[in-house]
View 1: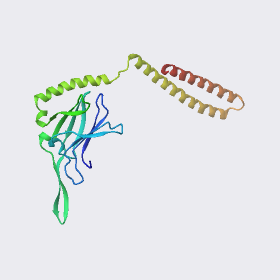
View 2: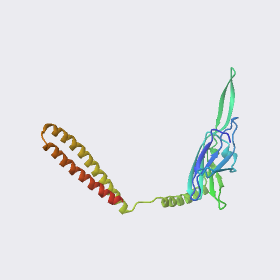
View 3: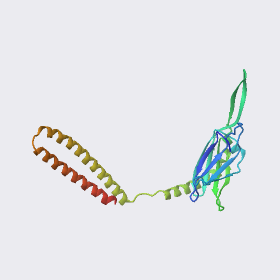
View 4: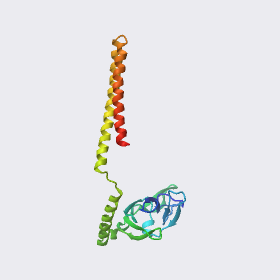
Length: 233
C-alpha cells in the first residue's frame, strides 16, 4: 500500500456512495506500482479495498493526472493523462547520483480512458480501455456523442430551477434587505446629527426631539422586519 506520485479521483454514482480510485505510483524502492485500487464507501469509515484489473499501459506510470467524468448515473470515465514510466538513479561521477526520469511520450499512452460501469452485482467494473488510437476512431466519436446526450439530460434533472414565484419572492426579499440597510445607515447618520445638535441646544427640548425621531426610526425598522418575516416565514 505504500506509494507516492500516484493519482486518485472520486467516483460519484447515482445510487452509490463515493468511491476512491487510485492508479499507479512508485513504492518505497522507487519501483512502479502497476495496479488500480478501488476504495468503496469511503465516507462510512468502513471502506473496502479491491484491485481492478487494468493493462500496464494504464497503471505503469507515476506523476500523472487522473480525473473522473460522470457520463451517466451508472457510468464513469476515468481520464488518465501523461506521467513518467521509469525512475532510476544515474551515476554522474564523483560518487554522486541524480534521479533520471523517462516521460511518457507515446501518443497511444499519453491520454487514455477507462470506462467503468456499475454492475447489477453492486460494484464498479471495467467496461473498456481506450488508448490514443481508440480516441480518434469513429466508434469512440459515436459513443461519446451518445453518452454526451445522456449526460446533458441527466445533469439537467439534478438542477432545481426556481419558479417565477420563487424568483419574485427572492427579489422582494433582496429589496427588503436594501431597505433595512438604508434605514440602519439613516438611523446612524441621524443619531450623529442629533448628538451634534444636542451640543448646541440647551434644555429638555433637545432630549424630547431626539427621543421622538429615534422612536420613528425604530418603528420604521420594525415594520420592515415584520414584512420580511411574513414573506420568508
